[in-house]
Length: 390
Image (cartoon, rainbow, N blue to C red; front, side, top):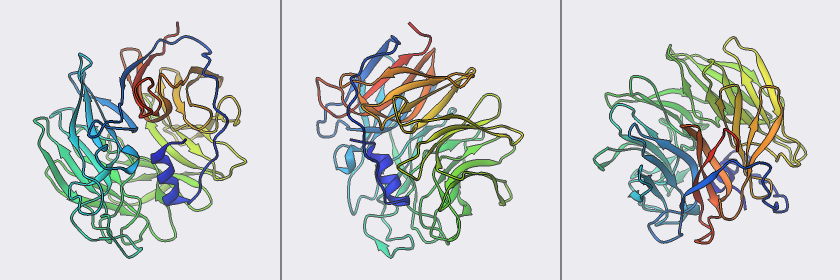
């Protein structure tokens, strides 16, 4: 088994898959007090296979999405309250005619209003034209789930001009503007970078051209209004900067592989991970400093450390991440000296194949796993793990 969402993502970009290694024993290198917050049951309308990580609101409630392996009645937005109570707060329809969208991506929460914003890869009430002819499943939607539970489609993607099939998480800036990317459509048929402004205006900020790139990571805003993102560009990937007035600048090109995650550190640097284009090579963890200096912080070996990371999160001088393609997956730490430590080897009980972003709160990392969660069902978990050691 491998990450369903990442599998679809690479299918759109590369039409390629990776073979998995033999299942690992699950022995722990060190005790880090992992807690399972919720085991998905696989029941209809209860959510299944979370793949995009989780986010906290200002009150300490935890939110995420499930994609149900592309099957109806499992695609949801869920909430885990501060007392541990799990509830589904929105369910998506599935298939053609799903005007509210289906196959949800990662969500973002407005810190001021508490409203949830997200996108779906498919669905919507328009005929989708993304450069490949009309697509009956729809181009996806941008939605808001208000704090009072009201669900609203803010924008239905049509493909040819505004973009189609968003796959990456959304991000907020300090003014409550929302930013995202689409994976296809636009005038160049390779996707767009868009902004949904606090006043309700949808704007295409940039269209990737036919000879250019596809967006592969969320875009990261800075205080000056610039956006930073990662892309797949044919034979390799790139990190780009998009200025408020529109010009796009390539800050770094990868000779091998392409970025699959990108986050901002407290030092103003960008941190991320790459996936290799070749089965014989493995991914990396990298840093792009504020001044432009690029550093490869870690090169995966394909052995005990795994193949590549879905995400990394800077915590102090260290980086924490997940790897979901070797054995049952793992949570790891890369120290400032470049040393790699396994924090936790995932098990059928804790959840398998960790996916999506990590969130830090009160010395614990929070994340999701797409599989495992026994003894209930092989439908995934939400977990937390302490990172201060035993």
